[in-house]
Each structure stands twice: as C-alpha cells, then as structure tokens.
Amino acid sequence: MDKQSRLSALPYLMVEQSTNSSEFKVQFTLVNHGVGPAIIEGRKIIYNGKEYDQDFHQFMTQSIPELKSIKPINWHNIYKGQAIPSNGRVVMFAIGGDEEKFNEFMNVLRTFKDSNTFEFEFDYRSVYGDKWRITNQNTVPVPIE
Image 1 (cartoon, helix red, strand yellow):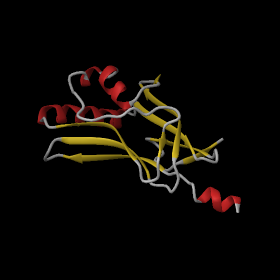
Image 2 (cartoon, one colour):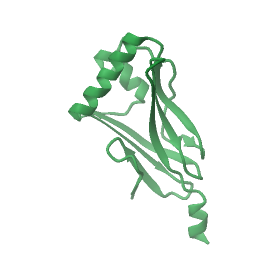
Image 3 (cartoon, rainbow, N blue to C red):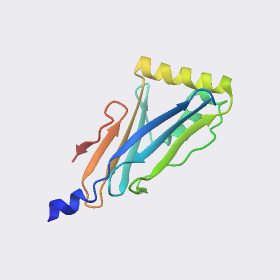
C-alpha cells in the first residue's frame, strides 16, 4: 500500500527548450510531467568550473557578459521549497522579438554546448521525501540519497 501511495505522488521534472526561429523566441521551462508535486531542494549552475546559486535569469543577465544587453521577456525564480504541481510549468527564462538579440543568444547557447563549459542541476523531492536530480547531462531524473 505504501508503494502504491508513493507511485501516485511521483514527480517527474524536465527542462524543456522551445525555439521559434520565425518569431525570434526561445524559452526554457521547468515542467513536472509526474503525478505529484515536485518540491525543489536545490539548484546549481556551473560555468567555467565556478558554481552559481542563481536562477537562469540572474545567471544569464549578471554572469554572462555577452548577454548583458539581452533583456528577457519572461522569467520566474526557482527556489528551495518551491512546489511545482503535477503538469505544472515554470518559465525559467525566455527571450524574443529581436532577430539580432535572438542570434546573439543562440550563439552563446551553441558555445555552451560546444565547449562543455555550462552545466545545471536541479534537486527535487516528492511529498514522501524521495529525491531526484536532473542536469543538462542527464535529463532523465536520477534518484539521489
């Protein structure tokens, strides 16, 4: 019975990127595809070997010089204790509307991918205390102790 209860409250977080080149928009969303709430336990961005405890918005606009001139059109904070409900979505960072800024942003993303200098981690738990981690290297949630 305990196993059935735990399975009925199983969160499943994923980071999704949506890109619309014709409208010059890109968006990163934290989505819970599970059946129970995902409670954020921690977040981390690692860039050039340095750790940042920041939202994507803070990191992109404060820590990346190439992006200081790019203003996001939408963002939300991700913080410890935040609950993302089943089928819930949190737009972490979105830019759009300007072709030049869009291309600058996409170039930075390509540099991140090509150089392996950028990583992120989100730790979360279920209401029963089971814990998982997602990263840009491992998009399927991995159980953690």
